[in-house]
Image (tube, rainbow, N blue to C red):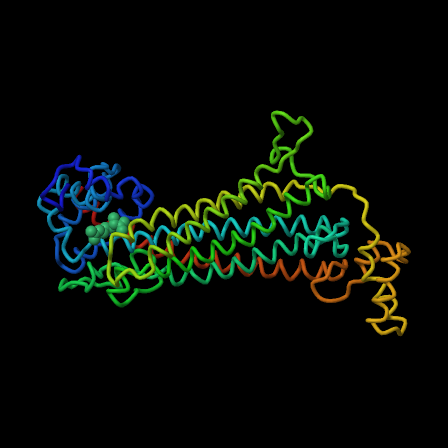
Length: 448
Ligand code: ARG
């Protein structure tokens, strides 16, 4: 304990409010933020180079958060006081845990989002490859979970890609909001210390400063935007996951899931249960619950920092972690899933027959009723095959081979564009982080 002078380490009250265990997640980011603070204290003339060196060495030797501290910030400051001598006492200048945690959270979220976006690019690439291979693989799609019309498995896969690509863009758009620096904003109104917030922002590779100090220290809305978009991705994926369960069930029997994704029953030897997808389905509920917990903790909190915000942190990471592992599992399944040979119910060609009739000059509604009657009376007999049905589909985004090739090439262009965006973003951040490393090395070398 450093800040409070009452109670003891073992006091339930101290352990109840401590975030030390959860803070392990942001330990590296907290150290990075503290380095930027130390460098800025030096550059702005508040500490000497020698003091800065001792402090940077102290930060580098900090590896473990003792759970008796209130949090990583208290533990780190105490460590610096113990290891850097006199200089340790300067670390509190112009700084609060409020601006430091807000900065570390944004750095962690930025890293997580970049990793997720990278992973989704791989996922999309794999899907496009499989779509190309399955351009002519017969498949059925459903509305109201009743067989609707024939298509190809490639067409279904392009749907999966389009869903993920759209969510990719919406997650990417939240990056710029997250990538703003709260550092230097103190507890809530900044300080009288001459810290250069723009320089601190550059040192950490942020795009810009989050200006107002009340926003900077207490807002989590940008982080929540990212999490909402990530959960939205999970909602989209949950529908694909559900398709995998239903379409591989004996009742439908179109898909064969890879062996590693199914398990059997300890009692019923014939069972092939889609267990990874079942767990995925439940985990989506869990991240939705996390989002609800985050939102309801955040709602109506008075402006400015409140310790409730600390309880939000681990929920953010749970959403990101579950999404990353979920995407990995679904990636593996979709790499290997196979469409079985199956008999297509001829009635799913009814719409085609009505379209064919209307092409012969009969109004569509009349053609529709003619076909409906034949179906009702059990006399329906299609004049084309499911393959012909698919190749007749003319509108953009349809499953005919020409439209599929067009869809794949559009999707590829978009994927390449997104990959470029991500590469540029990463390079930009690396440049900023590089500046911190250069400054750090310069200061550390001086003393040797
Ligand atoms: N551990 C806190 C968090 O993670 C940061 C500390 C703010 N504490 C305070 N008493 N102002 O949000």
